[in-house]
Length: 377
Ligand SMILES: C[S@@+](CC[C@H](N)C(=O)[O-])C[C@H]1O[C@@H](n2cnc3c(N)ncnc32)[C@H](O)[C@@H]1O
Image 1: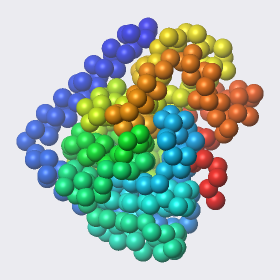
Image 2: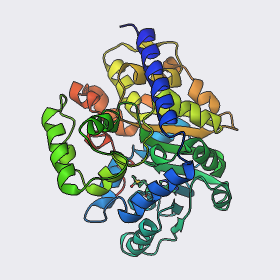
Image 3: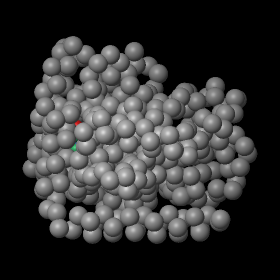
Image 4: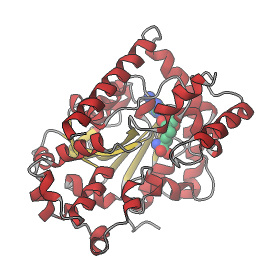
């Protein structure tokens, strides 16, 4: 199948999925869906605090060196950081530990999650000035009250569950200062829930709410046994993960181009996609970069999403008012010569061509280049 054909097919599937979801929820007020999502996290805050929960969260985020290389942040270390949808705080704690002098603000609309985060804050990042607030990302007034000068915003695993992701993105975008960057982690069209929810419905479960645990584990064990790809054992996943990531009133599983369009409408410029970036490294190591020329980095990353979609997008966007926009339109030949492909973290890896399985790993947790960079303890 040629690239154009693959792209057209993915776009059509995406379009149909979008309209099917819109039709399905056309009679349900968005505020009701939002309330149901909040209830999920009020009952089961995420992630579960425990040993290594900060380290695990850190591993799920891309290295900060990569984020910085995508957007050439003006400050070597961000001074104001917003964690949008902070849950019980692991992501915010990881960032605070990485940037000890930064002012970190975490917000979440689940009050029980924020309460847990506040209790943990004293133990995990003692003495930090971190602020943890209860608030809704779609509430413009609340978001404006946070200020408009954040250098860096991290929003991991949140927007896929918000009925109005465009509104949340606009509010987040307004919080960015000039030259600031947004890291966004969201479900893709290839997320396991995209196949899993119809399959569970076919097995007689109501995917809008978590079924009793015994029944749930039993059905998931069947799904695991029948899975074609070794896609991880879903039956063993914690309930607070399954409650939102597989069940729940709605999940936006969208292609990269659709997320990019939503972000562009919110005034953001797409800078790069972590999985696609690693794939391009493979192409460079194979001496195949010329095939991709003269496309821009953004175009190449979207092309890779059409050819080999990953399950979870990890993207960087830039605040659009500065000429940072030029970065996203640089051609690959320019980037091949720049530090984009020769980050200190990856420099020694260049000699050793990554093993094919490393490049095809779809889940961020299995990637060895994860973790906000190496310098955190
Ligand atoms: C899967 S958890 C991710 C938590 C955290 N970002 C992490 O990765 O560890 C999703 C979080 O987003 C929060 N959330 C969802 N919709 C939200 C909204 N509209 N406003 C604020 N928080 C929201 C939920 O309460 C939940 O804590």
